Length: 286
Ligand SMILES: NC(=O)C1=CN([C@@H]2O[C@H](COP(=O)(O)OP(=O)(O)OC[C@H]3O[C@@H](n4cnc5c(N)ncnc54)[C@H](OP(=O)(O)O)[C@@H]3O)[C@@H](O)[C@H]2O)C=CC1
Ligand SMILES: Nc1nc(=O)c2c([nH]1)NC[C@@H]1CN(c3ccc(C(=O)N[C@@H](CCC(=O)O)C(=O)O)cc3)C=[N+]21
Ligand SMILES: [Mg+2]
Image 1 (cartoon, rainbow, N blue to C red):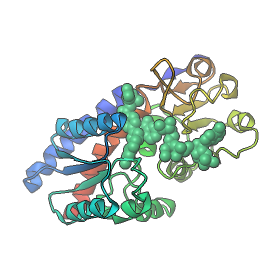
Image 2 (cartoon, helix red, strand yellow):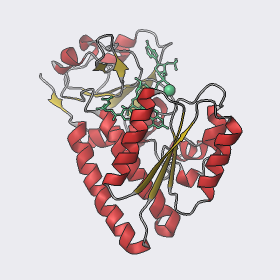
Image 3 (cartoon, rainbow, N blue to C red):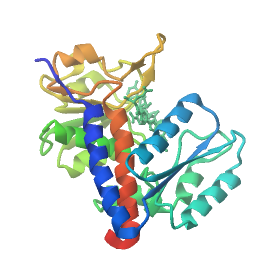
Image 4 (cartoon, rainbow, N blue to C red):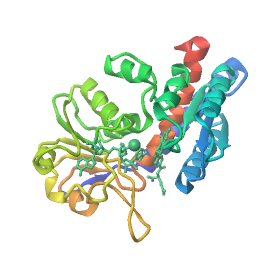
């Protein structure tokens, strides 16, 4: 079998069109655009590029988008003050604090400080708890975007065996929750998992969110599996590689996401979707 490519770039474009229409309706109804505020602490070059892209993407769909750049030595209290201001500002619908944060700032204190209704990353424990209990809240962008990719591939999830490799709060765990809610039989693998190859070979749906270039080998892929590669790894030759050995996996999978051009663009498009959703919910259209 040769896999079909799940074109995240094209599907993300479709999502952005949907959001653009929703934004236009929102503006006619409420006389102002949804607003997204992104906070970046420090100068990490990749984070600078990502946050600029988020700001630009928000403008492209007609939102108000603002990037707040704070110096690398910003203290926790100062960042918490900035979050409190944005929480109190009625023109702000979405707040995103780019991760990772410098070591003097405790990530949990920052995530806990964001108004859950403005938490467009879906990282606040209230939103994580709502997801875990099957109630609607703001859902993390990368897993939600990955579910959209599975839907676009026509993947049958009910009763399917899904394996998620990685258990982070931002990708692996919420991805597993979403697959479970869609009635898949879900296994979460991680760095202590014994015989990862055998676990992966069971997967009808395989999601890799590890951060190790080409960790997942071609012969770990079940014939006909749908493979979602969340990994973004910079290799020695300066290129981006996923967590899956793409060329080898393509010979066995039915569908596979490329890196770049797979999950990454969906993350940004879903952030816009979440911002529109947060804006509507805040203005009583829950
Ligand atoms: N495309 C996109 O939009 C996004 C891409 N990413 C990318 O996805 C990847 C994962 O990100 P994130 O979840 O934040 O990463 P984390 O580092 O937070 O989590 C990685 C997970 O992988 C597990 N792991 C590490 N090594 C192995 C191994 N050898 N075998 C099995 N499991 C292993 C870890 O296990 P343990 O818990 O035991 O330590 C952990 O659960 C990264 O490449 C990141 O760049 C992330 C966010 C968005
Ligand atoms: N609070 C917070 N929320 C996040 O959602 C968040 C974060 N912090 N910190 C970093 C990770 C990573 N992340 C990506 C988003 C888009 C691409 C993306 O668009 N990638 C493109 C191109 C990448 C390139 O060429 O460098 C692609 O895969 O095709 C990648 C990675 C969001 N993250
Ligand atoms: Mg992480």
